[in-house]
Amino acid sequence: MMQTENLEIPKINFDANGELIITPSPTSSKDDFNFFEGKWKLRNKKLNSRLSNCTEWTEFESTQEMYKVLNGIGNIDNFLATFDGHPFEGMTVRLFNPKSKLWSIYWADSNEGKLDPPVLGSFENNVGHFITKDIFNGKDIVVIFRWDARDKNNPVWSQAFSEDNGNSWEWNWYMYMSRFEQEN
Image (cartoon, one colour):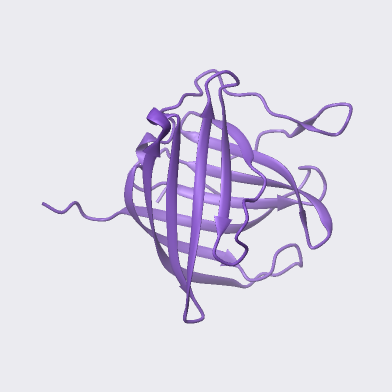
């Protein structure tokens, strides 16, 4: 397993109005998520409480399946897990804008029934960083998703929150992925 925790987070930039400035990498492409097409087994490691100095983690298994849409400029995946004996389903919609060269990643789940604000970004050297501003427990935060696809057969997705505009980060969820065996 590759070390994803030691990867550097790009510097977060804001304009004069406090809005995020997100610039695509020179290699950003609609093909960036091609490695993720198909069915996956996931080992999740999720912080029990976010932004509360918690050091306890819960680990659980889940599955995910991704397929392309919109002639390849988008993809959708379904995330299936069980929490405390109850089924949980999440859905990701990813859209590539050919003009801006940025990906927008949207999340919805069976607990909330709403799309979260999109995280925006791109891949460089098989590592993608996607950011947005959001509100968590009444506080303004910055959210970052990282896709580490340097090992395309075992990618790692992770999420971190920042309460200080990206000066410090708390990683709160990791997904370690492996492909389901191909059936003949």
